[in-house]
Image (cartoon, rainbow, N blue to C red; front, side, top):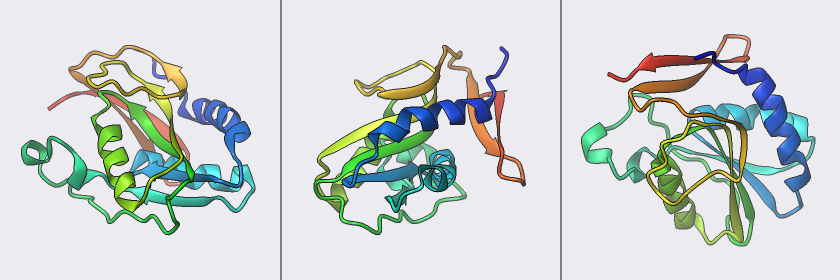
Length: 165
């Protein structure tokens, strides 16, 4: 499979997100890829947009099987979630379980007016009735493979596609 250019996808995602930004919008990136995307989005959107980062490790339904990821970080939601239009950002959408965990955690902070999910890649394989409203690229990737967004030292993105362990 030829992997798409994540920098081009980032530009497409940015253009789709721009019209959605209002005074009541807050952007929340899911650790780690979604947090990286959020970090790059904020200066481009050019506004003082409330933002935060979620690490959903403790909220996952497979926590007992997976254990803690070695890069677990505390979530940072430094704004009142109540009645905000949350733009939830992630890099690769797969089964929907990470997003379910993110929504559960967000609701622990308050009741948002809405949550819109934006992802770079929707790779297929959904297991829950959750889907991104915004996706820069849709494809089907075998369940035996793992598509991962990574960053070069200069902050630019690249993808890897590897066999699951």
